[in-house]
Image (cartoon, rainbow, N blue to C red; front, side, top):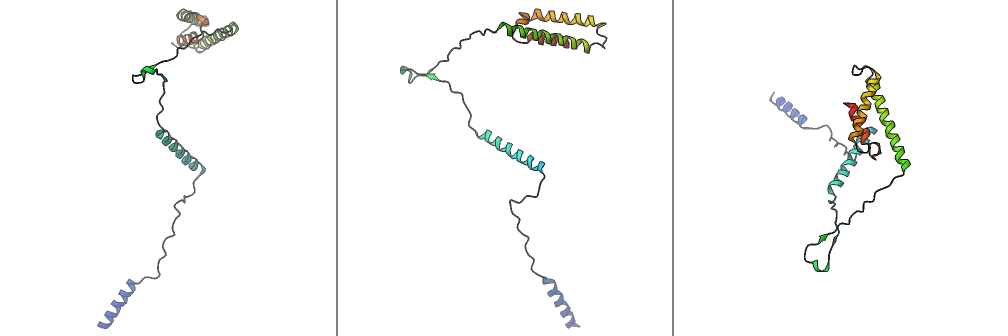
Length: 170
């Protein structure tokens, strides 16, 4: 009995310590391997990389400073130099009267369109009793703007049109 006990114990020990076959190591994965991705994911990743590179390029560039040319004379070599800036000659631009007339007509048309559009929008509201009241209100606004804006329609900018739009918004 003792012998059989040692025999069973020895067999168990040998069987538990043995291995069936040497295990093969896992195959090495290429470091550049990536699982397949959809086209959208690829384009998104490429855009992110591109903008990251642009940001790094922007941050690493040297600061640009405007250089002002300074005129030095022979006696001022050691002393600080004087900055000389050339004066600009402002020559008034004379425009063709036909172009000015066309601009004036365009502005008048735009103002009238704004007035008509305002009256159409306010047609159902109780603000005005008739279309004539709306037109009268708009012409009063136009007169106020003409008095505010110097030279009326002859201005090169669109200040009269902007003034009328602002008055009609209120």
